[in-house]
Image 1 (cartoon, one colour):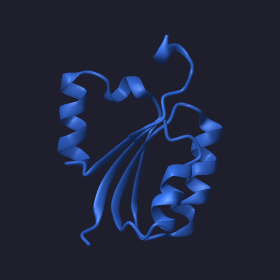
Image 2 (cartoon, one colour; image 1 turned 90 degrees about the vertical axis):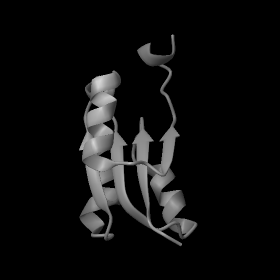
Image 3 (cartoon, rainbow, N blue to C red; image 1 turned 135 degrees about the horizontal axis):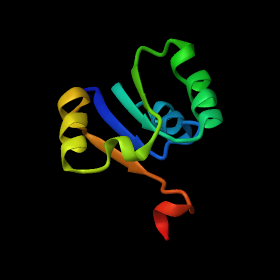
Length: 95
């Protein structure tokens, strides 16, 4: 199976990536998008600091990738994405 590139929107502490790892899904790159600095810290402890062989990219604000030009740049820099996951928080984004 080829390794995939994942875009994890509203990634929280990275639980979805843990599940993909447990399922044996090989990942080359994961772009984590999460605005909560504590969640990002825990996410890094769960993944990047464990030297799992995956390239982890962290985006601190959803707004940094929102819009046509921003999405194009994200895809150009880190894509194309094979899997896009989103667990939108119940905050301003879903009102």
